Amino acid sequence: MAKKSAATKAVAPVMSEDDKQAVLAQLERILADRLFSETTRMKRFLRYVTLEALAGRASRLKGYTIGLEVFDRPEDFDPQGDTIVRVQAGQLRRRLDLYYSGAGQDDPIRLTIPKGRYAPSFEFRNNTPEPETAKILQLIESPKARKLRPGLAVITLDNLSEVKDTDFFAEGLTAEIVSALVQFRHIRVVAIRPTVSSTSKGISTKDVAEKYDADFILSGSIRRAGDLFRVVVNLIVAETGQVLFGQTFDRTYTADHVFDLQESIASHVVALIAAPFGQINRFNRRAYAGRRNSVPAYEAVLRFYDMGMSPNLEQAKQLLEDVRQLTEEYDNFSTGYAIRALLHVYLCTQCVPHGDRRINLDAALSLASQATQVDPQNALGYFARFQALYHDGEIDKADRMAERTLALNPNDYLILAYFAVTEAFLGRIDTSKALSESARNLVGNPPPWFDIAPLALKVAQGEFDYVDDAIDSIDQDTALGLLFLKLAALGHLGKIEEACELLDRISKGDPDYLRHALETFEFWQASPHLDAAARAGSAPIVSAMEERRRKGQSKA
Image 1 (cartoon, rainbow, N blue to C red):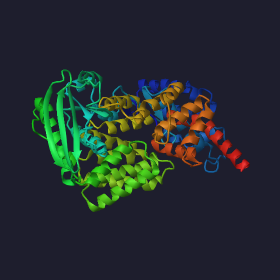
Image 2 (image 1 turned 135 degrees about the horizontal axis):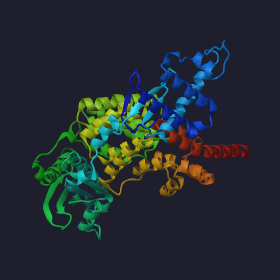
Image 3 (image 1 turned 180 degrees about the vertical axis):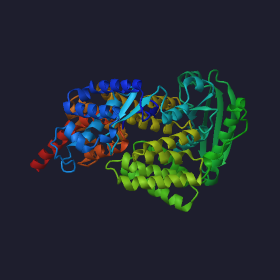
Image 4 (image 1 turned 90 degrees about the vertical axis):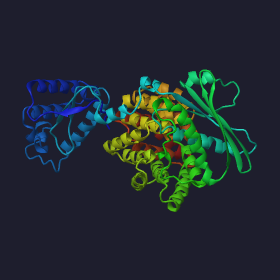
């Protein structure tokens, strides 16, 4: 899919002489590009249909006429029997897409041959972003805007008890706190992943302030004895270490109190941080709409977020079944429907071998719609609708779901990072970079899959050495997107043996792993430049793997 980098306006039926001259200049600009400079017949085709359209003879552009005038067919030429015009028109459209996704992405006029016709279309573009991109960019904060809000760094709660499984509860509770806090536009929340804990030696509040641009720090600890646990939470001024607020919560570990505890902590934090903006003691409860106060539901949500962008097939299917049972038991579990939808998308876009695309995407769209019907304010539901539409190639509809998601929750760094990946694959460079920056500003030590977006742009630009160096290692738990990019880089760099050894290590017994991975890649709607780079890089690896298999079979 070609990148659109500017808003467009269709040319009126009657063009001014200045507009005609501008189109002719654009035509020459295209024909001078390497995609057309060595293809005499293709240049002749494009020049002919453009000049005829400018002369007011677009209605004459039929298969028969083009066969005679461009391809030198005799007068008894039958375009139904001889398909040369249709075939060449298809190739011309693909070359134009490639041109506008690369060298022509900023050209003032976009020349296209719409499917189903041979008359060209001319679009004059101004310098403002296209409507969809503009709306998304408006929902992403600039660095200047971020500075106007107080930054809150949330550090994973420490498990100070001897009960080992309390580690899971401490990390989960911290994740739930962050999930609640990011709903508030007036607070800039930075989530510091579990590699940092509040009692780790050598941690300075001033260091946290500088590293994460944080004004405040939320830290604390959990002690547990049997079913009783104590949670201590402190709100600290990052620059000075002054404790502004501290409270102890003594609770019994039961299903009914899990979310009550999280709400109590979040309420106190929000009351303090949001006070300058008039939000004292106001707590937004929409994060809980459609959720169930049960330990299985709580743990299912945590399992989903823990799975991230690197699920395996068995893991995804098991969680899908567990959440299905929960939504059958609790029909207003909105987040459960959203998770089921996202898992269906994962089955055909992030698992190898992939599942049936049509079945999974249809199921995803239905479940995501159910999630937003149960809770119209559930951003995760709209995010699931985005994924189903995007991976099905419905980009315009997906853009609208992205806008709705960000309007409801502009601070969820996982959603922002995923949007950055899809924008990178589409070739929307500026939007992808802005989304990546926003996501990274909201999380310390982000997961490796956050690198997919910038590295995809590097692959499309042919910077294969950079990509190879940046992706140090690949294992069975690595996100599939990183595998695509690593293989593309290795192929272009001629490191075929290294690529084969990598595939041998992660194939999990699937002899057709690479083929399945490349089929999955098709669902990511890659721009022509990225798609061409990925496939050109993987081609010699595919050949080498097939040769290995043939040798193995002959030995057997």
